[in-house]
Each structure stands twice: as C-alpha cells, then as structure tokens.
Image (cartoon, rainbow, N blue to C red; front, side):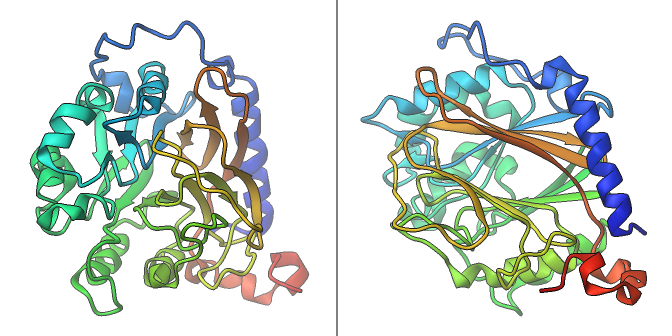
Length: 334
C-alpha cells in the first residue's frame, strides 16, 4: 500500500536508474539498412529489472502513396521490444491488399513482435477483415479485438474503440474482470485508437471514451496510449473526468505520428504538457517494475523530442489510509 511519499521515492529511484544507464539515454545512431528485416529476439520481450523492457508505440501509420511510414519504421529497426500499433495502421480502408502491398514492406518487418489495436480506418473494410486476417491471433479474438498481456511486471490492456463500449457492453465487462484478475502487477498500461483527451483541431476530446477511463482509473492504470489525432501530445496525470490528479491520475499520450499526415491545435487542452504537429516519430517507453520512462524519437532530419520518467501508483481503493491525510498532502486539493 503506497503513500504519496513512497511514490516520490519510486520516482527518484526511476530517475536514478535511467540516469545511470546510458543504454536508455543514447540517441538513435547508425540506422540499419531499411530493407533488412529485423527478427524478434528473446531480448525484445524478456523482462529486465535493471535495463527495463522496451515498447515502441505509434498510430496512424502507413499510406500507400506516402513515404513517411518508412522513416518511422526505420526507427523501430533500432528500438527493441514490443511494437504497439495504435490503430489506422494502413490507409485508406485497412484492406487485405493494403496490408500486404503497403504495410508489409515497411512496418510489416516488425510483425512478429507487434501487438496491434484497430482504428476506424480498419473498419472501412467490413468487420475489419483485412486487419484480423493480417495479424491473426495477435489481434485478439476476431470481431472483438480486445485482449491483454503481461510484460516486465506490467499488465497491458488493448481495447477496441470501434465497437460497443457502454457500461454494460461485453468489452467493458471483460475489462473489469481482466483488471480484477491482475492486481499483483505494480503497473498497468492500456492502449486503443480514439483518445479521450486531445488538443488537435481535427477530432479533439472524445467523451465516448469515458467508460474506458473510468474502469481503468478505478483499476489503478498508469498510462494510456492513443492515436487518431495526427500529432504528438502528452498530458499530466488526470482522473477520468479530466481533473488533474497527481496521485492516482492516468497519463495519456497521443501518438498519431506514424507518417500519414499532421493535425494542428487551435488551443491546448487543460493539463496538456507537450504538443507537436510537425514531427513524425515513435514513442519509446522503457518499462521498469515500478516505474516508466518515455521518449519521443523523431525521424531523421527532425528535432522535436520529449522525455521524462514517472513512478507507477496504486489503485485509489487500495490506498484507504490516504483518506486521513489533508488534501494538500494527497495532491487532490484545490
């Protein structure tokens, strides 16, 4: 049972681990030949409590008539670990032909280590057939597309924002049960396509994602990853209502920077800490047993980056002793 003070100590430890490990801070150099496939290795997914487990995340990726997806796929050539695709993986319809002709030559070389989510463009093909055919069992049960897995002391949940997700829907019932079965992991991460919060002027905030957030928040989730809006954005930890919550809040990243296009922001949402709509790139996450580090890695020739580290936290219901603390001590006051 963690207190707010212990969380600060965990953050200090995470910062020390990252600072003492040059492997986590060095730049991307000497990129490999983009035509040489990189096979998944044991080190891609094996937990390592000192070096951490790596995940590379991105959405809104491949368009048959553009080349920026090749530039982002070259970044993944140099970053080991799980590839988390955040939906709209291939345009315009997520058809089998588009996956085979356009996705396969670039991001397809990372298929063996990919754990995908489906986007709305996948559903431009009826039932997202091209998506489920291409990824097979890695995409979860056909017609559902939600599933979970464990890596490096983290529980990871992949959801489908293109199908029913109301309070009594099968997907939400599954999510509640899945989180209830995974209470021993110190950290929880979830990803799907449509963001609950976004400053981009194309789509912006999506209240229909609130049910996901309410269940994840109650379950103590630490990080949420989304795509859909073609920009990079990082938010401070928030409650499902959108209120700032440094103790139990979920940190959301929007990573719609795979190469399709860019959306600008007319104004920034509350608690938005970083926003960029000019760089293509990927989000590199290093997952430690009780903390995580993030780094936005841009494609060659672009300079925007964003990085930081944070400790994981417990679920609100499991820290009842905090109820006796003054509001300013918990960080939930004015």
